Amino acid sequence: MAIEKIIPGTGGEHYVPYEERTGKTSTVFFTRDLSANGLIKIYKRIAEVLSGKIAVKLHTGEQNGPNIIPRDWVKALMSQELTGGTIIETNSYYAGDRDTTEKHRETLKVNGWVFAPVDIMDSDGTVSLPVIGGKWFTEMSMGKTLTEYDSLLALTHFKGHSKGGFGGSNKNIGIGCADGKIGKAMIHTTPGQDDQWDISDEEFMERMTESAKAVTDYFGKNIAYINVMRNMSVSCDCEGIFAEPVVTPNVGICASLDILAVDQACVDIVYAMTKEENHALAERIESRHGHRQLSYMKELGMGNDLYELIDIDNDDKKICPKDVVKALVPFGAK
Image (tube, rainbow, N blue to C red; front, side, top):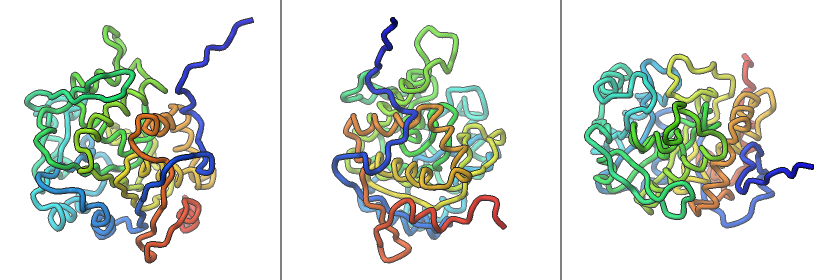
């Protein structure tokens, strides 16, 4: 009789309910206000850790992608609260609108990212950051200019992802700060393989998370996270106009100084929805073992999966994900 091999660290296809988690508690702020004003309001709750030369890491998207964070929201935030801030990006690993610096610059123009400086960090080389406590890497290759910044705001469009299951703050900096040809290949591809995407499921989640840890360790206490839960296709913004249609309700914006807490809160809100509302996104997360992002962040000491969710629209009342989704208009309702 064959003995099933038990692989430590698996289980990324299973959602872990809040009551089954243990450990310390972090704070996550929440607003239902999906607008420039809402973004500015919630930014102010986590802004105290950002100073000096501030990098704003966001996914600027493939050309004409319909789901990226609205440019006018980011423009308002940067003109009112982040004057002097710089949007940071790296070139893509896959062939497309952003795999070279020249094409990437043109795509930035097409998508309207022209109101603030944009640093394509790997346009002139790479820098290696240590990965402390990882099992796949001891260092990760990042865009060269990442180390020129004093603090970082991860401004993330929370959505699904074809490889990661979901794309939150962990994906935004884990994939998004790795340079396009070396770092991203380290995460996605086994050396010597012809298949550019041969790494998947648990191993991919762990590799991506170790890359994110290199970024969080580098910035230390000078990093903050905002997740915008709007236009949550199961597809990443790297799929541009080919993204799957959005069938999950818009929610609001979450922010925290804890990368695990903010991503976990967003996943919890999705799982608090009805099956009709969350079926596509939940299936995408589970089929790709996306929950391993969360459990591995916890194993690496990157944050807490227990949190207090603070409703900044209602006198900082403590709420739970079920209270958040009670106020949603069911998808497809008039």
